[in-house]
Image 1 (cartoon, rainbow, N blue to C red):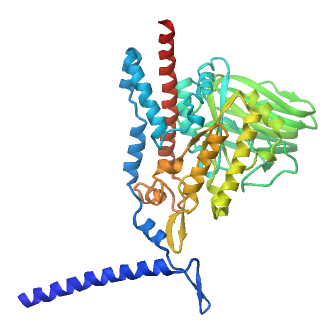
Image 2: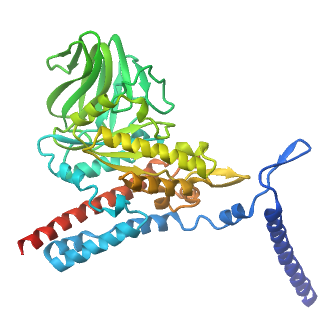
Length: 484
């Protein structure tokens, strides 16, 4: 019996020694192995480098639940503390200082240009004052926001806080199902897109604020719109945005009197005021461009979702700036969210590519600021994305540098930035989001599931709401100081 134990012990130590020998040998191979594949007998052999081995072995760094809880708690100045600050000036000053510390340090916070925590205040004040006309928010993004993902949470939250109804602007034809509004069209209409892979480019630049347009060639079509889900109806205003009308275009909403728009080269609109309703039919006939159908509550806030599958965010140079400006002014745009970067990564191989892309984003930001100077801008960086490097699934090697450079670009061009990559947990966090039960990201290791999109959007909303609460406390503190 003892001899058996003794042999077992010898076998155990031999096994341990063998394991460490293999690890050591792999480490030596990783250090001395050449970069890139080695061809041998017509086959390509890939050797992992030491950086890849160490990065893969040490991640994901934290669990998704721990990461999200930490992000949410970092933004959580609870209602009781804010209520107490409302009644005690010293508590209010303490809360302001606490918020400013979070703005400066928390990964989940918005990053403000030049450290100016008041940057978004004009947008909030416009929303507070939207008592007689609607204030608009545009959310441009890639496929991460398809189907109203992320946008819906922001819209619902803003409308709960400031009032409002409706999905904002929708296209005449919607190829992707949306979870807040159902729409059908009786016949197909030629549709063109300024960016992405959803369809053709036009031979002109008349895309309108939704970065797409439908070209009517004399046909008669009827679109049916219906609100989906609790709280997403209450439509009180519908406006059709059309242009380049070469013959009279007739528009009829339900049984209301028809509206006619005569020949015009520029932007034209037709508006209907309604009692609160959750569905309608709009019939259009004629020749001209249709840039979008605005649906809102007549006051308060609404948020338009503009997903561009496959787009990298470099598209504004394809769009007629005068038309874009006219539409944004018409709907009183005060906040623009731009969410891009993920689709640029496949073309980014080194630091020079990162710099080149971010320079292009800086140009897009400047164009948007010129087109709509009344609006504030939040740029959202890409989510984590996993690819295989030498056979190992990991974060895209250039992604950390890209998000850091995008943050710098936004600061230099005077807009706010939100780092989705950091909020997720950083390096290899996408792997953890996919492995989480229930899944928070899809098996493509790129896109969120609906549940994951809701979680990330909830943290983004907390960041926006905390900055708004900061404004309210700051206003009260300033008022009391002035009264003394």
